[in-house]
Amino acid sequence: MLRFEDGRLFSQGACTFSYRPATEQDTTPRIMIGVQIEGLYTETAVDTGGVYLVCDPEIADLLELDPSSGLGADRLEVRGFKVRGTLHRVSLMLLAQEGQSLELEVTAFLPRLQPGEVWSFPTFMGLMGCLERLRFAVDPTTDTFYFGPIGDDG
Image (cartoon, helix red, strand yellow):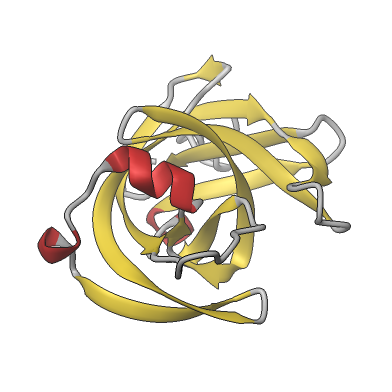
């Protein structure tokens, strides 16, 4: 695990990431890691320029979250497209292959597609409302994604 200079842990877990396009339509490689959202396994793209945990609508449907119990409606621009949806607090677990997995509560955007509308994006973890809740580092020489909680205990 990664450590600070004083010996405190920076990360509590690590996993291998794949660096590839996230979907068949995508041409840009992305850092993809395995996670669990409310116990459902999926792969997600790490998107430090994005907001929230933006869920693929199929994942959103499987979560069966009631829109009226959410944090409210929102409209996001996702890769140039304006999308309506609802915000919810969900459990996200980063799955460790080394060390300990990390579970935290994040803000998720669950898109609400119009009839006939097709979603061609991956699930992705944005910085605001999601990644800002943990420490993380990427080692591109070993394809390792390190993660840990934010706090004084490091």
